[in-house]
Image (cartoon, rainbow, N blue to C red):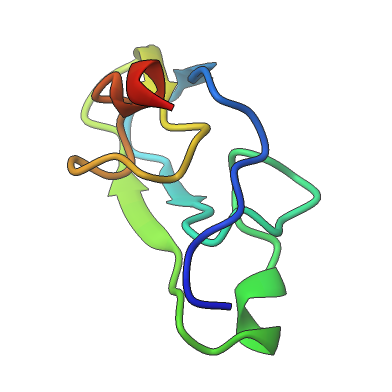
Length: 80
């Protein structure tokens, strides 16, 4: 797999907790979107992106997997 799969074009709105570590799926294969479930290991090219939440807040994680600012949505999906 050369390019990531796009599980959804828009972002995932997620509430994160201060001090908790999250792993964003970069390949698009995870069944637990937007988070990694290890599915990328079958393909070998992609790795999950670690995110440590600095505070309790809502974040918008990329759903198209084409963002230039992973794991966050940068509206790249608007060009799809």
